[in-house]
Structures are given as C-alpha cells and as structure tokens.
Image (cartoon, rainbow, N blue to C red):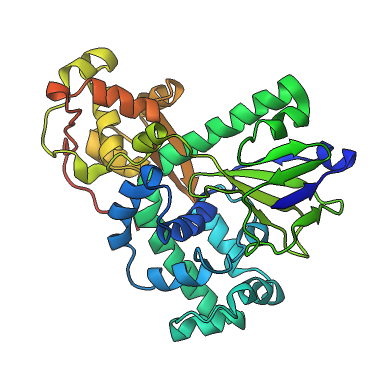
Length: 359
C-alpha cells in the first residue's frame, strides 16, 4: 500500500493535468508488455504489438516492464502538448538528470541491445536514438488513436474539475475510489506496487501534487517523484469501462473499405463537403490540414468546413510543431457508425487521390 500524506498547504496545490502524447507512448509501451485487463486493451495490444519493430521492443523493455522498474520520463520532461515538444525536452535534459532516471533499470538483469548502455551514461547519440524510436512507436501505437485519447482525457479532466468546483479537493480525492481511498489527511493506494517508488509512506515536502489521467496506466495509480523534480506526479488509470475502450480502439483507416460512397444520410445531415471532410479525417487519423484539403478537395484556407465540425464536437485538433493534426472524436465515430452506407459507416476517402504520408 502507498500512503500519500497531504497537508492543508498540499491540498491547495493539487491539480489535474494531461501529460501529453510522449507520456502516453511511454506508458503504452509498458502496457503492451502486460497481460492483464484484456477487456480494455486486448484488441489494441493484438493490433499494435506486431507494428512495434526495430528499436521499439528494446526501448519498451528498457523503459519499463511489469516485472521491473519504470523510467520516469514524466517529471523529467513534464507535460508536453505535442510529441515533438516532449522529445525536444528529452534530448535537451541535463546529463545528470538523464543518468539519474535511466539508472532505475540498471540492476534488473534484462537482456538489452548494446546501444542502450549509452543511455545510462547520458550519451547524446543514444538519447537521440531513443527519441527517434519513441517517435516511431508513437506513430504506430498512439497516433492513430490520439484524437480519441485526447478527447477521453480532456473529458476526465473536466469531470475532475466539476468535482473540485462542487466539493473542493476533498471531493476530487474521494472520487478516486476504489483505486485510491481518501482518509484525511492521507490518500491510500491499496494495491500499489512499490517497484515504481519504494517508499510506502510519502510526504510531498512542499511540492505540488499533479494527478495525471492516462489511458494506458492501469489498473493501479503510479507515483513519480524524482528527488529534484519540481512536482510529484501520480499517474492514474482513466480508462476503466470496456465500452469506452471499444470506442477508443476502433480500428483506424485500414478497417474501412476504400472507394465506398459518402453515406447519403451523412451528406444530407452535414452537407456533402463537411461529410467528405469527416470521412477523410476518420480514415486518416492525425492528418495534416494540407493532407485533409487534398483528399477532401477543399483549399487549406477553407477552414470553416472543419472548424464547424470541431465546434460540433465531431473532430478535434492537436498541434505537433507547425502541423495542425485533425482527428475524429468519439462523437464523430458514433455519428459515422450510425449513418454509414447500409449501416457500415464506410466513407469515400479517395475523393482526390492518395497523399504522401506526413514525415
């Protein structure tokens, strides 16, 4: 059991925050090695596992496995709204901080690729190779679902915010049952496994507590509290309902039949252009505005077509460096599934023609 002690001053500094795509990628690699919660992650693991190749399996085992330590990229990098931002922070982190974090897994006795030894020494070439491998893993494991993941996590933050408005921080902490139990002034995590943080009674020492919902964390919250970190991060599972999981892991573009017409009911509801835009985004998650405009046959400047869809909650927009990435929300997925051609939700994704993948 973990017992997290909070003073009155600590309670005033508690906040809820989404850590971003780098954190979800790291936790996703950890989740990919587990065998529990098959109802939540079985389909995603079966589809994603074969796609994680090259350095991917090596960094997955290095960064964390169910049987060993878990490297803390969260307090090291902090919350990062896009993957590029998180990887830049990782590459620029001080060498002593990198050595400190990568030393977590030094004594686990796992078989590793030779280049990973350079991480323990904070070798910049090795750190760069790690960043490149994380980008590749993100592309196949998280990016196809990121719009839905972000929408789900934003919903969790909004839910927690409503609890705080209605009953203060005490209501927020009490609402974490059964994975954590608030017994003032202590937050207990009954099933906590100490390999992540060995201290079972923990005091914040004046640092703020960040509650970070994660799709891939589970089933037990995990504490990340580096000795020189500015905050203490508790990552907790935000995906607990198999129905939500089924919507989140709905097969991406390759599960749709290319060349099918835009569903007439959808075109009648939204207008043909908006229906095409919605179908393009559905079949090409995380597509850029340029890719979207080419496939949908609209100009990049014609932002009103997909801005309307965002305001309606059907699509979401995230940013990675200079690119605006468009993805379908859960509501958009439900709308497509209910307005498909013959009920199958298939869309014409080749209105203009194929577009080269974003680098």
